[in-house]
Amino acid sequence: MEIKGGASRDITVAVFYCLRIVGMAPVSIKHLQDGYRFAFKRIYSVYGIILISSLNIGHICIAGYDVINGLKKEPTILGNNTVLVTLLWLFDVVTSVMITQIVILRGMKQTQNIIECCKKFDEIKGKVQIPRYTSIGYKVFLVLFFLSQIGLDALYTVGLTDTYQGEDYTLQTLLYCLTFSAVTKYVIVCLLQIQMFASYLEVALHVKYVREELQELNDTLTLDDSDSSFYVHSVNNRLKHIGETFESTKNIFSEMNESSPGVHALILLNLSFRLVINLHGISGFLINPETNFDPSLQDEIPMWIFVCDATHIIVGIMLMTQPYANMECELRIVKLLLGSIMTMKNYVYNVFPYVDMFYRDLISFDFTYSPLGVVTMQRSIVVQVIGVGITIIAAIVQFQKKK
Image 1 (cartoon, rainbow, N blue to C red):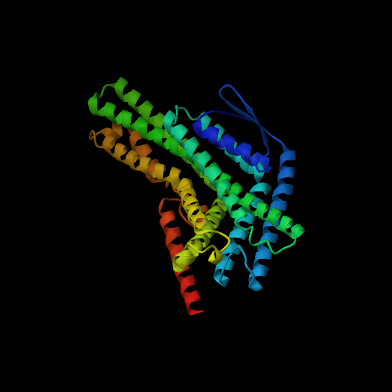
Image 2: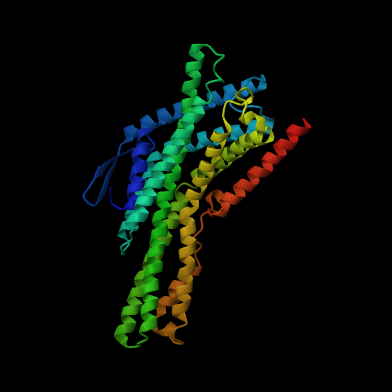
């Protein structure tokens, strides 16, 4: 299978390279002069199932170890936890395990769906591009986002040194290996976030192309209101092309929404649980500010790591919703442009029939995505998640005070 190159494709292929290391993208990739060629390798799938299953088992084991220590009232990575915080952390573990296990079992099918959607976009007539500086900005930001996730996970692992000091050397080594398996899972979730962003960014770019074509047509009609048959025919043909582009984009968008809604919903839940846990860690330092200055009173994880991790999670949620925010803005302008064209002449429906068809098609389809009906992908998710997190933390703090 071959696809054309481009800024969003470069991001998608880079994610494929990274996911292939853990067997989640079972393809070989060959660079062509103007794109990429993919060949599916079943051996990568087998390798990935073995590796990811091992990481999931390790993650479950380290979670079980920490919960048992918590029941014994020994120091754990949860610090001074409550039952509710422990449950949140276990939900985080369960969702991350489910995400990676589902993706690895559907790795070949999911990768094929993404490549097929790219091929369908290539078949749409029209030149869709990202400005050069915007493209560079996206790539630099995504690289920093990915590397910061690795850095935070590394700091998180180092922060557990004191927790395992009381164990013998063999058990310490085993615990560090299990912890490594856990933090590797969060790096994989980060890659899946970037993959989702790159896939839906292409939809947003095609919606932007439709808006730009309509803007140019609207400017032309404003300057020239000729009703000659040649002029009317050319305008109708252009409107037909814009409408077909929109129809194709709409169909591909629907296919993408149906490909892996469960994974996307689990990623959002996982990020929400992790954000609440980090907010709880921050609240602990705010309630007892002396722990910031007395190392003997600090938990294993310092406050600034909680702050950085919470910030990274919020940025990750914003990254996932960015293409939908772009689509919403572009579609709002498209509706205004169509309304402008439809009111230029009283006989516009007879002269430009594709305007009415395009407008009906536009208002009959909702460019929104709600994975499993859990939540609609939009910018307000960030505010909602933070609000829920603060509410939960307030309940935990009140419970601890009463206790």
